[in-house]
Amino acid sequence: MPQGVVVIGVQWGDEGKGKIVDYYAANADLVARFQGGNNAGHTIVVQGKQTILHLIPSGVLHPHTHCLIGSGVVVDPEVFLEELEILRKAGIENLEERLSLSDRCHLILDYHKHLDAAREGRTAGKIGTTKRGIGPAYEDRASRRGLRVADLYNEAAFSSRLKANFEEKNFLLKEYYGVLPVPMGEFVEKYRGIATRLKPFVRDVAARLHDAIALGKKILYEGAQGVLLDVDYGTYPYVTSSHTLPSQSALGLGARLPKDTLFVGVMKAYSTRVGEGPFPTELKDALGEKLRDTGQEFGATTGRPRRCGWLDLVAVRHALLTSGISNLAITKGDVLSGLGELKVCTAYEVDGRRYTDRFPADTALLERARPVYATLPGWQESLKLIRSPGDLPKALIEYLRFLEAETHAQVNLVSTGAGREAVIDIRGAF
Ligand code: IMP
Ligand code: MG
Image (cartoon, rainbow, N blue to C red; front, side, top):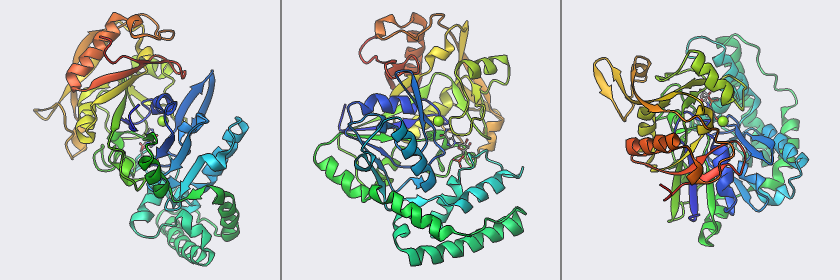
């Protein structure tokens, strides 16, 4: 693998990034997260055993890696501690030496979760968030009210700023949203305990990464969510509150990328999204349900059923152009096995205009988009046991070639099932 690999989702998240990260992590020295928080859900299956991680980089499942949580990540300290326990129970050891948490990360505190839930409780302006407090924590970062990991170790300043925040948030919760306020209670003691437990992990992540890059170490950058959920370039306002684009990988860790860095876009062979927002190729019929059942399309974080639909190449082209990605990993082609014919959206028609590759800023237009479809033959074979490019069904190879021609991107990897071993490198095979 090149010195740097950045793995990004090119749809609305849940493309199977966890699995592709796990594939590259086998050869990486460090695995780093640079945005989002525990709204993510990365599912990895190793020897039939499934692990779902929300915050700690999924590369931690390879015992030789050191994992970094960069300043661009918002951290719920209780979730961090819970995931440590899950990993310890799974027999993963030496976590103190293997995991670094940036002292610059913003903390997700209880009032952020309450605010997120209060906003989502209203019909107007509902985004369909994960209610993990991600948005309110990023808001506080931008408004300079946030508390960071480093602040946990300055108790006087921490408690006075915490108190001011409680007052402001409780005013909003009570007076504007009409819900119960969050009692401040024993918060200072609670965070004193958390500070002690986090301490062994807190490091200057940017400095550590900088040194690692200078030493020629291999770095894997683990994106969360997907380009179409980017706060600026996604389907605003139905997006997450961080940047999901690959350029965030340098920003959210505070270190330049290695000169030799490969950007990999992970793309599902069809489309899904969770939460509200436009989804032009959504299938609201029995076929959509079949995709959901076969693909086990239920949120790894919230358990919500994911909305399913045909592959949308307008959305993908928008993502590729915005992110500069030209290498793809295709996942979940196995879910399409057995369908007679497959549709792929190659353009939209909206109000007499045709869109092929860029989303308009006015997301409401996408609600009226009529997809234009190409029809391709499906494959009947199961992909589950296929491990070499030569054994892939002809129709699947045609599908991949069609995607390459339509996106001008190259398909590097094809995943044929959930397990760690079910990834095929097809470069140069056809
Ligand atoms: P938030 O990130 O919890 O604020 O949610 C904002 C939007 O992003 C909602 O539509 C969520 O369903 C979606 N979202 C956030 N994280 C993920 C993810 O990891 N996969 C898929 N959708 C996500
Ligand atoms: Mg997910």
